[in-house]
Length: 190
Image (cartoon, rainbow, N blue to C red):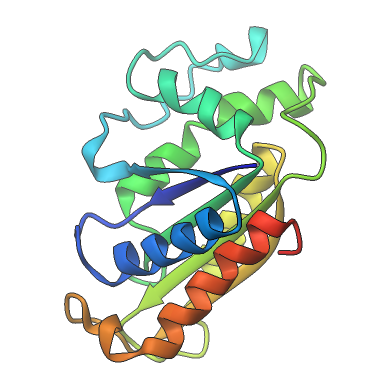
């Protein structure tokens, strides 16, 4: 079992980072091999709509996505963790997601299988405000992203009202929930 964590926050040691680390600890405790991608440390060019991927399923842009595609397709479970910026995902993470037009083309245009069947995914979202629709847009984007890489959206942890760096440490129940989310994914019950 391989679990890939995608850290979409630019704030290392912040709430999103700490929650993802707990989820990955839970997965590792369940016997999974875990890996964490920190998107802000990668060089990912935005999608330019060249549509080269429609020909063979590969993006024509050469950057760090070249090494990310194989990881996305090899993972048995994927956890996307992100803060909410203006009721959406941060630009760095959105660039990674948009560049998965290439995997979408493999799946829908070229009719190629994407990874093993039954792969699961989860979303950890953290927002400072308490708005009723705070996560709606981000959840929808993450669901479509996971689908585009051949992963079923299976679990989520959505935290409202947490903003200051590492403030999540004052919410041990949320950290425990993140740990359990990782454990469920590793067990295939997420």
